[in-house]
Image 1 (cartoon, rainbow, N blue to C red):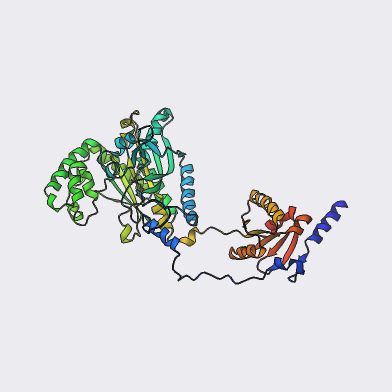
Image 2: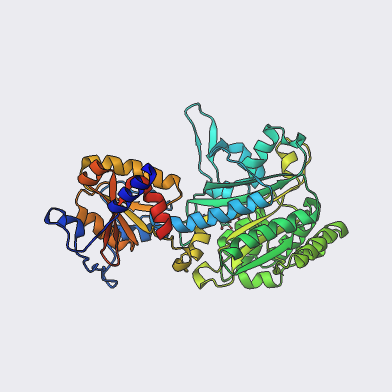
Length: 483
Ligand code: HAM
């Protein structure tokens, strides 16, 4: 009997409030105002123009205040949906393929990178941020992720764990390059590395993971692949290659003339128009590979066929880091504009000698890294696909006491898995209803002084303007039923 009485009391509380509200509450029922959209054609505000400049690789406009360094950019909340989507896909792939997450320090002993990436490489020679710290140690900001992961693998005795050991990371990298579209001095990479699996299937699986990551995000991917064999095979090839280019020295760009002595393999991926045609006639490394290297490569290609990962063979793909042996690969989008046609979305390869080179037991290894900024640039071409769903409910408050209650209610609604819009900084109800309108929520919950006292909350249907008063303790089941 008592239960019945209580229920009917609550029913009474839920009575529908008609549009004509009592005077005192008039403020609660602010009439729907047409939302004035910003004119699309209006020029971007100065602050935004600056950001765009920074996106192209540096803050070029003069500014009286401090700005991000040239080639470094802020990743702003307005693009978070793309970063979330990318990380979300990466995490899911890492979990499915059993990669553990690793985060190594941003700062390492500079020798780590010199020994792994290689003395004569652009990264070490021209791009690395190296300095002496306060203890006069020569340290470097991480220019790439693999070397640090190898160091950690050795340092933490992961050689003694059951192999293969599989790790992934997302981290910022620093290279003092000439900033331009898609090339920054700080960029972020997602990287996957496998230690202790000498089979070509490890290479194939990694390529397939990167391919899936990109294509699941809707990017039409092109995989380019090559084998650069083992160091002795490469050494013989380099003799041939150097001979070929020496004969054509006068046609080479200034950089390539230097490469001829320091790092002849890099002649093959020179982007200068004058150097490109020379490459077409250059000797190809495949002709210098041993039978076992060729067999390894063929098996990998067969695995890729089985995995239905389309690829194209690129006999001149050599990569810009010295630690690779056998397989090297890169990922490009098929829909590149001319400006970005040369920029890979990612790359990687096998580095069977690196663990030993850095002081560990000989351990085969293979991995890839993808550039997050470059992927996000691709995702931004399809903003609608990544737009986050706006909340369907907004919580408005009126008065300080109600704001405190609203704080608590938000927490409860979150615990129930509900997404609720709010703006605790606004004190006027009208301003809050305007926001609710803009967010196109279905319901706005209004918590005023009276409702606080009564233990109720007003539920306003944003379409019709009709309002109901609901027991605040029942608001979750009420909303769940309605939505
Ligand atoms: P990487 O080719 O030097 O390889 O870099 C991987 C990707 O990072 C590039 O394909 C590109 O998308 C992005 N990237 C590189 N430099 C920049 C830059 N300045 N601005 C924007 N994006 C950039 C590595 O770093 C190797 N550690 C990959 C690897 C992992 N190999 C084996 N395991």
